[in-house]
Length: 105
Image (cartoon, rainbow, N blue to C red; front, top):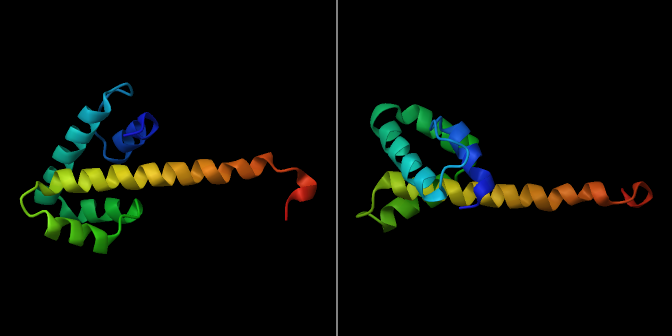
């Protein structure tokens, strides 16, 4: 997990972790939080997954293909992967600021 997404995950899921918390611990605590949401507030979990643009089809397929693994762990890993892609995408498109004004469309 990229270090720069740990604070974002911490914020989205209200994990209460310190900013310098190890990425493995963030993933573990996130998986525990997701398991809690599955059992206690499934609607809120669905809203969070929608807001983070987690593919419902990919999630269903992942859960079906891994019936022996904890759902919270699988979902947590999917969230981390999605947030890393989103961060990379934002970084790539932020370079448009470096283009000279006369070269912009």
